[in-house]
Image (cartoon, one colour):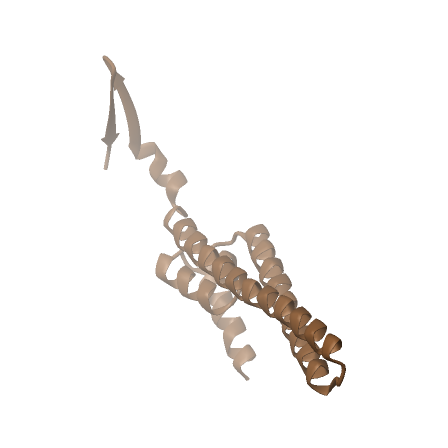
Length: 144
């Protein structure tokens, strides 16, 4: 039922003008949602792919760490116990790293959606901005 509510909401928001707060919210809730809202479909595909890959790696590394830890508890050979525990710790460190990458890519996605929404009407406003170069000085002129 939630999917049925999210899809029309996202579709209606695509048709409206870009709102930076809304783009940021969509990007925070749905991977690539803010990019879809901003009509940056290639960026959305990249964000979705990165998040899916990071989440998949995290799930794999967590399950491997748990599996090796379970094998260390079941083993009676001291050398096997040390080996399984060491390998389990390696996979747990990879899992922790994956969680950080998920958070970093999510934060960058939110920032990108926010900035992209702010710059949505830049082409229209570009004509009102003019740089003036005068005797070694640079000035900015804004017409409204």
